[in-house]
Length: 363
Ligand SMILES: Cc1ncc(COP(=O)(O)O)c(C=O)c1O
Image 1 (cartoon, protein in one colour):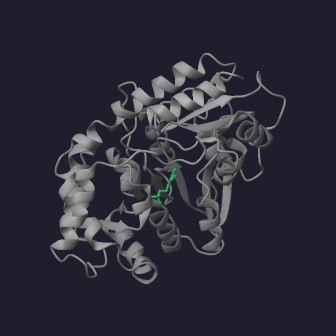
Image 2: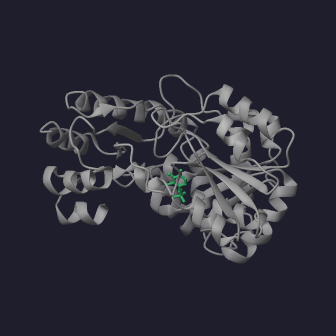
Image 3: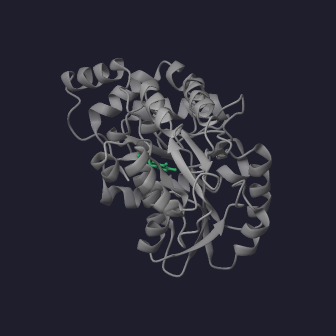
Protein backbone atom coordinates (compact mmCIF):
# COMPACT_ATOMS: atom_id res chain seq x y z
CA UNK A 1 0.00 0.00 0.00
CA UNK A 2 2.93 2.36 0.68
CA UNK A 3 4.23 1.81 -2.89
CA UNK A 4 0.74 2.49 -4.29
CA UNK A 5 0.40 5.57 -2.06
CA UNK A 6 3.72 6.88 -3.41
CA UNK A 7 2.65 6.22 -7.01
CA UNK A 8 -0.64 8.12 -6.59
CA UNK A 9 0.73 10.83 -4.26
CA UNK A 10 -1.83 9.65 -1.71
CA UNK A 11 -1.76 10.64 1.97
CA UNK A 12 -0.28 7.51 3.52
CA UNK A 13 -2.28 6.46 6.58
CA UNK A 14 -1.52 2.84 5.76
CA UNK A 15 1.79 1.74 7.24
CA UNK A 16 2.17 2.29 11.00
CA UNK A 17 4.91 4.86 11.54
CA UNK A 18 5.02 8.53 12.57
CA UNK A 19 5.61 11.16 9.87
CA UNK A 20 6.98 13.63 12.44
CA UNK A 21 10.40 13.95 14.04
CA UNK A 22 11.43 12.47 17.36
CA UNK A 23 12.57 14.72 20.20
CA UNK A 24 15.87 16.37 19.07
CA UNK A 25 17.21 15.75 22.59
CA UNK A 26 17.10 12.02 21.85
CA UNK A 27 19.22 12.49 18.72
CA UNK A 28 21.64 14.65 20.76
CA UNK A 29 22.01 11.78 23.23
CA UNK A 30 23.02 9.45 20.37
CA UNK A 31 25.62 11.96 19.14
CA UNK A 32 26.96 12.37 22.66
CA UNK A 33 27.16 8.60 23.15
CA UNK A 34 29.13 8.23 19.91
CA UNK A 35 31.42 11.14 20.82
CA UNK A 36 31.98 9.60 24.25
CA UNK A 37 33.34 6.52 22.49
CA UNK A 38 30.45 4.08 22.97
CA UNK A 39 31.02 2.58 19.56
CA UNK A 40 32.09 -1.02 20.16
CA UNK A 41 30.15 -4.21 20.96
CA UNK A 42 28.13 -4.02 24.16
CA UNK A 43 27.62 -7.11 26.36
CA UNK A 44 25.46 -9.76 24.64
CA UNK A 45 22.23 -9.05 26.62
CA UNK A 46 22.62 -5.26 26.27
CA UNK A 47 24.22 -2.28 28.03
CA UNK A 48 23.83 -3.00 31.80
CA UNK A 49 22.65 0.53 32.70
CA UNK A 50 20.01 0.30 29.98
CA UNK A 51 18.69 -3.02 31.28
CA UNK A 52 18.69 -1.55 34.78
CA UNK A 53 16.65 1.47 33.61
CA UNK A 54 14.11 -0.85 31.96
CA UNK A 55 13.86 -3.02 35.09
CA UNK A 56 13.26 0.08 37.23
CA UNK A 57 10.59 1.34 34.85
CA UNK A 58 8.77 -2.01 34.86
CA UNK A 59 8.90 -2.06 38.64
CA UNK A 60 7.52 1.48 38.85
CA UNK A 61 4.76 0.97 36.27
CA UNK A 62 3.73 -2.65 36.73
CA UNK A 63 5.00 -3.58 40.20
CA UNK A 64 7.12 -6.56 39.15
CA UNK A 65 10.84 -6.96 39.77
CA UNK A 66 12.91 -8.19 36.84
CA UNK A 67 16.64 -8.74 37.35
CA UNK A 68 18.57 -6.53 34.94
CA UNK A 69 21.33 -9.15 34.90
CA UNK A 70 19.28 -12.25 34.16
CA UNK A 71 15.77 -11.29 33.10
CA UNK A 72 16.02 -8.42 30.58
CA UNK A 73 17.62 -8.57 27.12
CA UNK A 74 17.90 -5.77 24.57
CA UNK A 75 16.78 -6.76 21.08
CA UNK A 76 16.82 -5.37 17.54
CA UNK A 77 13.21 -4.28 17.84
CA UNK A 78 10.17 -6.24 18.99
CA UNK A 79 10.18 -8.32 15.82
CA UNK A 80 13.54 -9.88 16.71
CA UNK A 81 12.44 -10.39 20.31
CA UNK A 82 9.37 -12.32 19.15
CA UNK A 83 11.16 -14.59 16.68
CA UNK A 84 13.92 -15.27 19.18
CA UNK A 85 11.42 -16.20 21.91
CA UNK A 86 9.71 -18.53 19.43
CA UNK A 87 12.92 -20.16 18.17
CA UNK A 88 14.05 -20.65 21.77
CA UNK A 89 10.92 -22.46 22.89
CA UNK A 90 8.93 -23.88 19.97
CA UNK A 91 10.01 -27.20 18.49
CA UNK A 92 8.81 -29.27 15.52
CA UNK A 93 5.35 -30.65 16.29
CA UNK A 94 4.48 -27.91 18.81
CA UNK A 95 1.39 -25.78 18.36
CA UNK A 96 1.23 -22.06 19.08
CA UNK A 97 -2.09 -20.22 19.41
CA UNK A 98 -2.36 -16.86 17.67
CA UNK A 99 -5.38 -14.59 17.91
CA UNK A 100 -6.36 -13.26 14.51
CA UNK A 101 -6.15 -10.60 13.16
CA UNK A 102 -2.50 -10.48 14.21
CA UNK A 103 0.83 -8.86 13.40
CA UNK A 104 2.23 -10.43 10.29
CA UNK A 105 5.46 -11.94 11.63
CA UNK A 106 3.93 -14.30 14.22
CA UNK A 107 2.80 -17.13 11.95
CA UNK A 108 5.91 -17.27 9.71
CA UNK A 109 8.06 -17.22 12.87
CA UNK A 110 6.19 -20.22 14.31
CA UNK A 111 6.51 -22.10 11.02
CA UNK A 112 10.22 -21.30 10.80
CA UNK A 113 10.64 -22.98 14.19
CA UNK A 114 8.86 -26.08 12.85
CA UNK A 115 5.71 -25.40 14.83
CA UNK A 116 2.10 -25.09 13.72
CA UNK A 117 0.09 -21.92 14.20
CA UNK A 118 -3.41 -22.51 15.56
CA UNK A 119 -5.44 -19.48 14.53
CA UNK A 120 -8.24 -18.41 16.88
CA UNK A 121 -10.26 -15.41 15.71
CA UNK A 122 -10.92 -12.49 18.01
CA UNK A 123 -14.69 -11.94 18.10
CA UNK A 124 -15.66 -10.37 14.74
CA UNK A 125 -17.11 -6.89 15.24
CA UNK A 126 -15.69 -6.26 18.71
CA UNK A 127 -12.27 -7.94 18.46
CA UNK A 128 -12.57 -9.06 22.10
CA UNK A 129 -10.78 -12.31 23.03
CA UNK A 130 -13.10 -15.33 22.86
CA UNK A 131 -11.93 -17.40 25.83
CA UNK A 132 -14.17 -20.34 24.98
CA UNK A 133 -12.59 -20.53 21.54
CA UNK A 134 -9.10 -20.20 23.05
CA UNK A 135 -9.88 -22.97 25.56
CA UNK A 136 -11.15 -25.17 22.73
CA UNK A 137 -7.91 -24.62 20.79
CA UNK A 138 -5.70 -25.76 23.68
CA UNK A 139 -4.45 -29.33 23.35
CA UNK A 140 -1.58 -31.56 24.42
CA UNK A 141 0.69 -30.06 21.74
CA UNK A 142 0.06 -26.42 22.71
CA UNK A 143 3.42 -24.91 23.57
CA UNK A 144 2.62 -21.21 23.64
CA UNK A 145 0.09 -18.48 22.98
CA UNK A 146 0.84 -15.03 21.60
CA UNK A 147 -1.22 -12.03 22.71
CA UNK A 148 -0.98 -8.34 21.81
CA UNK A 149 -2.43 -5.42 23.77
CA UNK A 150 -2.97 -2.60 22.81
CA UNK A 151 -3.78 -4.40 19.62
CA UNK A 152 -2.62 -3.93 16.07
CA UNK A 153 -4.75 -3.72 13.92
CA UNK A 154 -8.02 -3.45 15.89
CA UNK A 155 -6.93 -0.80 18.47
CA UNK A 156 -8.63 -2.73 21.27
CA UNK A 157 -7.09 -2.97 24.74
CA UNK A 158 -7.34 -5.97 27.04
CA UNK A 159 -9.00 -5.34 30.39
CA UNK A 160 -7.94 -6.61 33.77
CA UNK A 161 -10.79 -9.14 33.51
CA UNK A 162 -9.36 -10.42 30.22
CA UNK A 163 -5.97 -10.91 31.84
CA UNK A 164 -7.48 -12.70 34.84
CA UNK A 165 -9.44 -15.02 32.56
CA UNK A 166 -6.31 -15.86 30.61
CA UNK A 167 -4.47 -16.45 33.87
CA UNK A 168 -7.18 -18.88 35.03
CA UNK A 169 -7.21 -20.64 31.69
CA UNK A 170 -3.44 -21.18 31.64
CA UNK A 171 -3.08 -21.98 35.37
CA UNK A 172 -3.42 -25.78 35.03
CA UNK A 173 -1.09 -25.89 31.98
CA UNK A 174 2.61 -25.43 31.12
CA UNK A 175 1.75 -23.18 28.19
CA UNK A 176 4.14 -20.26 27.63
CA UNK A 177 2.93 -16.77 26.83
CA UNK A 178 4.50 -14.27 24.45
CA UNK A 179 2.99 -10.88 25.21
CA UNK A 180 3.52 -8.24 22.54
CA UNK A 181 3.18 -4.92 24.36
CA UNK A 182 4.81 -2.55 21.86
CA UNK A 183 1.97 -0.03 22.24
CA UNK A 184 2.11 -0.12 26.06
CA UNK A 185 2.25 3.68 26.35
CA UNK A 186 -0.74 4.40 24.09
CA UNK A 187 -3.91 3.66 26.05
CA UNK A 188 -6.79 6.13 25.95
CA UNK A 189 -9.68 7.49 28.00
CA UNK A 190 -8.02 6.99 31.37
CA UNK A 191 -7.65 3.20 31.04
CA UNK A 192 -4.36 1.63 32.10
CA UNK A 193 -2.17 -0.76 30.17
CA UNK A 194 -2.69 -4.26 31.53
CA UNK A 195 0.83 -5.56 31.18
CA UNK A 196 1.23 -9.26 31.77
CA UNK A 197 3.85 -8.13 34.32
CA UNK A 198 0.97 -7.13 36.64
CA UNK A 199 -0.23 -10.77 36.89
CA UNK A 200 2.04 -13.19 38.77
CA UNK A 201 0.45 -16.29 37.22
CA UNK A 202 1.04 -14.91 33.73
CA UNK A 203 4.42 -13.25 34.29
CA UNK A 204 5.96 -16.53 35.51
CA UNK A 205 5.37 -18.09 32.06
CA UNK A 206 5.84 -15.03 29.85
CA UNK A 207 8.18 -13.29 27.49
CA UNK A 208 7.07 -9.64 27.59
CA UNK A 209 8.13 -7.74 24.48
CA UNK A 210 8.22 -3.99 23.88
CA UNK A 211 9.78 -1.54 21.44
CA UNK A 212 11.34 1.91 21.78
CA UNK A 213 10.48 2.59 18.15
CA UNK A 214 6.80 3.03 19.04
CA UNK A 215 7.33 4.88 22.32
CA UNK A 216 9.86 7.46 21.12
CA UNK A 217 8.79 7.94 17.46
CA UNK A 218 11.91 6.17 16.12
CA UNK A 219 10.57 3.05 14.40
CA UNK A 220 13.67 2.92 12.16
CA UNK A 221 16.05 2.53 15.09
CA UNK A 222 14.81 -1.01 15.73
CA UNK A 223 15.60 -1.28 19.43
CA UNK A 224 13.34 -3.19 21.80
CA UNK A 225 13.59 -5.50 24.75
CA UNK A 226 12.24 -8.68 26.24
CA UNK A 227 11.60 -9.38 29.92
CA UNK A 228 11.15 -12.95 31.19
CA UNK A 229 11.89 -15.07 34.27
CA UNK A 230 15.54 -16.19 34.46
CA UNK A 231 14.98 -19.78 33.30
CA UNK A 232 13.12 -18.63 30.18
CA UNK A 233 15.61 -15.85 29.56
CA UNK A 234 18.50 -18.31 29.68
CA UNK A 235 16.89 -20.19 26.76
CA UNK A 236 16.18 -16.91 24.95
CA UNK A 237 19.81 -15.83 25.17
CA UNK A 238 21.06 -19.12 23.72
CA UNK A 239 19.32 -18.17 20.48
CA UNK A 240 19.93 -14.42 20.76
CA UNK A 241 23.69 -15.01 21.02
CA UNK A 242 23.79 -16.65 17.60
CA UNK A 243 21.33 -14.57 15.63
CA UNK A 244 21.98 -10.90 16.46
CA UNK A 245 24.42 -11.29 19.39
CA UNK A 246 24.29 -7.56 20.26
CA UNK A 247 22.33 -4.42 19.45
CA UNK A 248 23.56 -0.91 18.46
CA UNK A 249 25.64 0.43 21.37
CA UNK A 250 25.31 4.26 21.14
CA UNK A 251 21.53 4.04 20.79
CA UNK A 252 21.37 1.96 23.98
CA UNK A 253 23.34 4.63 25.87
CA UNK A 254 21.17 7.37 24.36
CA UNK A 255 17.94 5.65 25.35
CA UNK A 256 19.27 5.08 28.88
CA UNK A 257 19.89 8.81 29.29
CA UNK A 258 16.56 9.76 27.72
CA UNK A 259 14.57 7.35 29.90
CA UNK A 260 15.72 9.19 33.04
CA UNK A 261 12.80 11.53 32.37
CA UNK A 262 9.48 9.63 32.48
CA UNK A 263 7.54 12.49 30.83
CA UNK A 264 7.89 11.34 27.19
CA UNK A 265 6.34 7.91 27.80
CA UNK A 266 4.04 9.10 30.60
CA UNK A 267 2.50 11.76 28.31
CA UNK A 268 2.32 9.64 25.16
CA UNK A 269 -1.26 8.45 25.69
CA UNK A 270 -2.49 12.05 25.92
CA UNK A 271 -0.43 12.99 22.87
CA UNK A 272 -2.00 10.26 20.74
CA UNK A 273 -5.47 10.60 22.26
CA UNK A 274 -5.60 14.18 20.97
CA UNK A 275 -4.67 12.99 17.48
CA UNK A 276 -7.20 10.17 17.71
CA UNK A 277 -9.93 12.63 18.68
CA UNK A 278 -9.03 15.05 15.87
CA UNK A 279 -9.11 12.19 13.36
CA UNK A 280 -12.35 10.69 14.67
CA UNK A 281 -14.10 14.08 14.67
CA UNK A 282 -13.26 14.42 10.96
CA UNK A 283 -14.22 10.85 10.11
CA UNK A 284 -17.56 11.21 11.87
CA UNK A 285 -18.56 13.56 9.03
CA UNK A 286 -18.17 10.71 6.51
CA UNK A 287 -20.21 7.54 6.00
CA UNK A 288 -17.31 5.45 7.25
CA UNK A 289 -18.47 3.83 10.51
CA UNK A 290 -16.01 4.35 13.33
CA UNK A 291 -14.96 1.40 15.46
CA UNK A 292 -13.62 2.11 18.96
CA UNK A 293 -9.94 3.05 19.24
CA UNK A 294 -8.95 2.25 22.82
CA UNK A 295 -5.18 2.20 22.35
CA UNK A 296 -2.27 2.01 19.83
CA UNK A 297 -2.17 4.58 17.00
CA UNK A 298 -4.75 2.92 14.78
CA UNK A 299 -8.36 3.67 13.89
CA UNK A 300 -10.50 1.07 12.14
CA UNK A 301 -13.61 1.88 10.12
CA UNK A 302 -16.41 -0.17 8.59
CA UNK A 303 -16.66 0.64 4.87
CA UNK A 304 -19.98 -1.05 4.08
CA UNK A 305 -22.03 2.17 3.79
CA UNK A 306 -19.52 3.69 1.41
CA UNK A 307 -18.68 0.90 -1.01
CA UNK A 308 -19.58 -2.60 -2.18
CA UNK A 309 -15.94 -3.43 -2.75
CA UNK A 310 -14.05 -5.95 -0.62
CA UNK A 311 -11.46 -4.55 1.76
CA UNK A 312 -8.39 -4.98 -0.45
CA UNK A 313 -10.06 -3.53 -3.55
CA UNK A 314 -11.51 -0.70 -1.47
CA UNK A 315 -8.03 0.19 -0.19
CA UNK A 316 -6.63 0.22 -3.73
CA UNK A 317 -9.53 2.40 -4.88
CA UNK A 318 -9.22 4.71 -1.88
CA UNK A 319 -5.51 5.16 -2.56
CA UNK A 320 -5.71 5.68 -6.31
CA UNK A 321 -9.03 7.58 -6.62
CA UNK A 322 -9.49 9.41 -3.29
CA UNK A 323 -5.81 9.78 -2.45
CA UNK A 324 -5.67 8.23 1.04
CA UNK A 325 -3.93 4.93 1.81
CA UNK A 326 -5.37 2.47 4.36
CA UNK A 327 -4.73 -1.21 5.14
CA UNK A 328 -7.36 -3.97 4.71
CA UNK A 329 -7.89 -6.02 7.88
CA UNK A 330 -8.01 -9.14 5.72
CA UNK A 331 -4.21 -8.80 5.42
CA UNK A 332 -3.97 -9.81 9.09
CA UNK A 333 -5.86 -13.11 8.65
CA UNK A 334 -4.44 -16.33 7.23
CA UNK A 335 -7.62 -17.01 5.25
CA UNK A 336 -8.10 -13.41 4.10
CA UNK A 337 -11.34 -13.03 6.13
CA UNK A 338 -13.10 -9.91 4.80
CA UNK A 339 -15.39 -8.11 7.28
CA UNK A 340 -15.42 -4.79 5.38
CA UNK A 341 -13.10 -3.09 7.87
CA UNK A 342 -9.94 -1.12 7.07
CA UNK A 343 -7.25 0.40 9.31
CA UNK A 344 -5.88 3.93 9.31
CA UNK A 345 -2.76 5.03 11.23
CA UNK A 346 -3.11 8.42 12.92
CA UNK A 347 0.55 8.75 14.06
CA UNK A 348 0.80 11.69 11.69
CA UNK A 349 1.25 15.45 11.81
CA UNK A 350 -2.04 17.30 12.23
CA UNK A 351 -1.56 18.74 8.74
CA UNK A 352 -1.33 15.21 7.31
CA UNK A 353 -4.49 14.18 9.16
CA UNK A 354 -6.34 17.29 7.95
CA UNK A 355 -5.24 16.62 4.35
CA UNK A 356 -6.49 13.03 4.59
CA UNK A 357 -9.79 14.10 6.18
CA UNK A 358 -10.43 16.67 3.48
CA UNK A 359 -10.16 13.91 0.89
CA UNK A 360 -12.14 11.38 2.91
CA UNK A 361 -14.97 13.86 3.41
CA UNK A 362 -15.61 13.57 -0.34
CA UNK A 363 -16.76 9.97 0.26
C1 LIG B 1 1.93 -5.55 17.20
C2 LIG B 1 3.32 -5.24 16.74
N1 LIG B 1 4.33 -5.98 17.20
C3 LIG B 1 5.60 -5.73 16.82
C4 LIG B 1 5.89 -4.70 15.95
C5 LIG B 1 7.32 -4.50 15.52
O1 LIG B 1 8.06 -3.68 16.36
P1 LIG B 1 9.58 -3.34 16.00
O2 LIG B 1 9.57 -2.30 14.92
O3 LIG B 1 10.17 -2.86 17.28
O4 LIG B 1 10.22 -4.60 15.52
C6 LIG B 1 4.87 -3.91 15.44
C7 LIG B 1 5.15 -2.83 14.46
O5 LIG B 1 4.33 -2.42 13.70
C8 LIG B 1 3.54 -4.19 15.85
O6 LIG B 1 2.51 -3.46 15.39
